[in-house]
Length: 352
Image 1 (cartoon, rainbow, N blue to C red):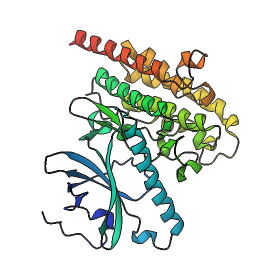
Image 2 (cartoon, one colour; image 1 turned 45 degrees about the horizontal axis):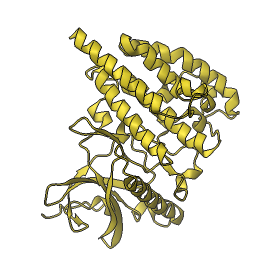
Image 3 (spheres, rainbow, N blue to C red; image 1 turned 135 degrees about the vertical axis):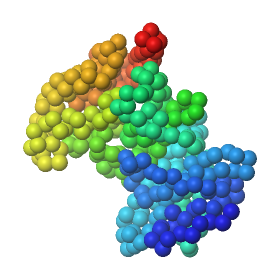
Image 4 (cartoon, rainbow, N blue to C red; image 1 turned 90 degrees about the horizontal axis):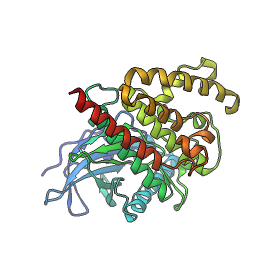
C-alpha cells in the first residue's frame, strides 16, 4: 500500500498513513478528534490493523512541528506528557483493569528525519458522545444509564489503583458493538504510584467546560480532594450532560452574576461558594424534571446534586458523606445507576 501524498503544511505526526508500526500494525485511516479533545500535546489519531484483522487505535505525537521551533520548555513538557500517558496506560494494563482501554504498544517511527512517538491502544468504533448523543430523546433512558453505570465502574477501577482520570466526559468513554463501555484517554490523569506529570502543577488539566467549580477558582487541597474529588464531580456532570445535552459547569456558571464567574472573579472560593450552592440546588432539579423520565427523575436528580456539590467537602453519594463509607467511594453510585437502569427498562416495556 502506497502512502498518500501529504501537503507541505502537515507535521510529521500527520504522515503515518500507509506506514507499518512495530512490524505488524498497518496504519489505514486517519481519525477525526472529538471537538472536546483537551490533550496537552499536539497529536493525531489513526486506525491500524494487523494482517490477521486485529484493529487498534493509534495516537501519534508531533514534538518537532514548526510552531514549536525554539520553544524548548514546551517541547520538554510535551515529551514528559507523552511518557506519563504511556506509563499510566501500562500501569492500568498490568493491573488488568477491564473497564479501561488497554495499551498494546508504544514506540516511535522516523518520519521526515523526525521521531514520531505513538501509543497503540484498544480500538472502539464510537465514543459515548457518538453512540448516545447527549440530550437526544432517541436514546432510551435505560440505555443511557447502562452506559453511565459502566463508566462509573471504570472510574472506580482507576481509583482502586490510585489513578484519577480528571477528564471524564462523553468523548472519553468509548462504546463497542456488544454494548460494552470503557474509559479511555489517560492523558490528563494523575497516578499516586508514578512520578508527577507536568500537568499536576495545574489546578485543572481537562476541558474547563466540564471542570468542578473549585478548580476553576484555583481552590487547592489534598491530592485526594483535588484529583479524586474532581472525578466524582465529573462523573455527576457526565450524568447531567448525557440527559440534558449541556455541561452542568457551563449551565451553573452562566446563571451566576458575571462578576462572580471564575474568568473575572478575584475573591476567595469561600465567598463565591454560597452563590454556587444556591444556583446548584435551585436550578438542577428544575432542568432535570423537564428532561428526565418521571419514574427515575427524583433519585437521579439527587444523585447529580450529591456528586456535583460545589463544596468538595460535601461531595459524594449522600450516604457516604454522612459518614457511612469512603466519601468519594463509587459502590453506592454504581448500585444506584444499576437500580435506575432496571426501573427505566421496566417502565419503557410497560409503555411500549
